[in-house]
Image (cartoon, rainbow, N blue to C red; front, side):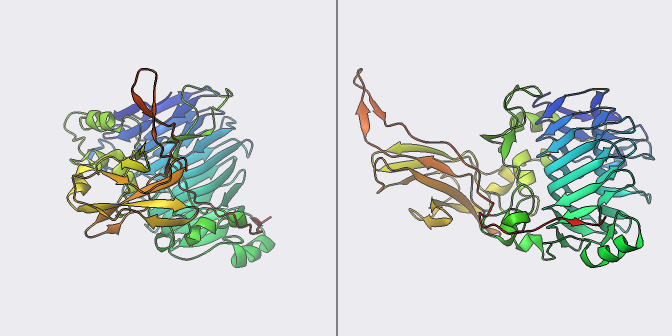
Length: 458
């Protein structure tokens, strides 16, 4: 199932039962109303090898619209259960404003395994009762979590990444912030950025394990600084050259990166490219104007104009700007000319456009960026021509937006172009030399190796 949306009411939104080898790719789900004791936006019941790629569970926290109180596990994604589930994967997924459990991953008698990677969970709420809540809750299976961001689960009974009995939980290269109770309960951990993240406890029993956990529970290579001041400007990426860009194992990134489409469109499980991180940009999110237009209307007596569906908002701007920072431009394109390149980009979201004072265009060489052509001033201008370039040489550019209050954004996706003189075709018309316009994701991983290892509590 690919690039589908579902919203409104019901117990489950996207529901898979007794399945194997199913893929949900770039789907969006939202709960607006409920008359059942339990809700989940994505549910894989008694399923194995169920794959979620770039899926979004969003804005499902309006409990005032729920006809019945929730008294069972509820949340965003629920994979597996007591029926021996294994091989389930969450990759590049997003949970924002879910209830109780953004990611609930289960199995049977400690058998099986699942994986969650490069995914985020923000703003978890629990409706009125003291029940277990966590960004990731693991039960009865082995789970490996890597490059996951969990942020804002502040109540006294809310947890971060929590491993219940049966199986093991391994967490690496992840960020845990603003947790009210237990920030981490895992069997193994390494390179965790934890800030106001609550307590850390071992999932291993025994005196020796508890003693070891007292001194190294967060794991080797872990840090305690504020991620928002050290590279986490946007939920979906870590800024290059920031401390977090090299705070992971072996000097790699700590935190998520959700910039490219995962899985070649139309491929089934096991086919070539089915789980590949492609070179296609994920943002702006596919069909987001249509998604927002449709989801602004929902069940009777409930408004769909909420969250990313508010006036002047877009799904991309809502997610990228969730931390309050100015969002970079998108859909940057390059048109080459004789000794020049003209860059064009999309206007900002309507909710941001009034405070944008201009744009900067940078020429990039490795990690060095140089402002070229001065600031593009004024809201109506979404293009810039860079002259004085050498024909036949390939250049790399990126664009930033400037907000009168929030300052300058991070870089847009990078783009390459090769200027050249126009060539005469047989029909007498002119054609510019072939250019490279392949946009690249920002490189957020340092190449400097650092040796490190997991902390194993066993």
